[in-house]
Amino acid sequence: MAGREILHKMKVGLCGSDTGRGKTKVWKNIAHGYDFVKGKEDHLMEDYVVSEFKKVDGHDLGLFAIFDGYWGYDVAKYLQNNLFDNILKEKVFWTDTEKAIRNAYISTDIVILEQSLKFGKSGSTAVTGILIDGKMLVVANVGDSRAVMSKNGVAYQLSVDHEPSKEQKEIESRGGFVSNFPGDVPRVDGELAVARAFGDKSLKLHVSSVPDITVQTIDDETEFILFASDGVWKVMSNQEAVDLIKSIKDPQAAAKELIEEAVSKESTDDISCIVVRFQ
Picture 1: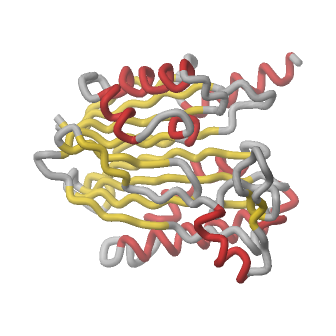
Picture 2 (picture 1 turned 180 degrees about the vertical axis):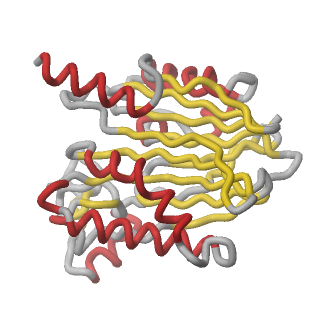
């Protein structure tokens, strides 16, 4: 048991501060912060977070991501350390950002699958956002972690929930099936509750790693962007989440409030949340 506690402390350190919270940071006129909490399941925390700004080729890039691991955290950890690097290494990043992201998602998944002995059945969903010079946001995702934008207090979902029931034809065309057992959610091959993810070689023939991608212009009506794992969205709607935190100016405090509300609504999953607020 002591060994598990030590590993958990190491894991928390990777995600942020010792308390598990990402203190609010400000880059020019943009503030960002995050928080997370381990769920009630009997396993180590499986979420990983990226929330940072960096200078690349003379441009200011905001890099934001929630990686929600399952059946272990190895793939989520690998994505935290490598996915954005792989995206930025794509030669077409500045000329065709969407293509670069799509290529990097697929090529990163291939590398993970090639190391299946190391990663085992571990897999991860992902939602990523790249903010370019504070003016354009490119969101990509596989799975059910979600990105939501607030404009004049109205919630707009920027990502796509990849539910097996919505992609049943594609899954069946690849030789898989979608189960619909009473009292349970639809699952790919009776196992996985999302239709797209990284890793998990045992299901990879039937589970895609091709992301959905959206591009949004940041304008004067844009108040904040919210990224969160499905532990939030299982218990509240996009608009409920926006309404809850729209008056909280500090992003980390807003993320904390959102997580506490999800827990109070009996969400039992690991939960991670990033808030990016435009001043």
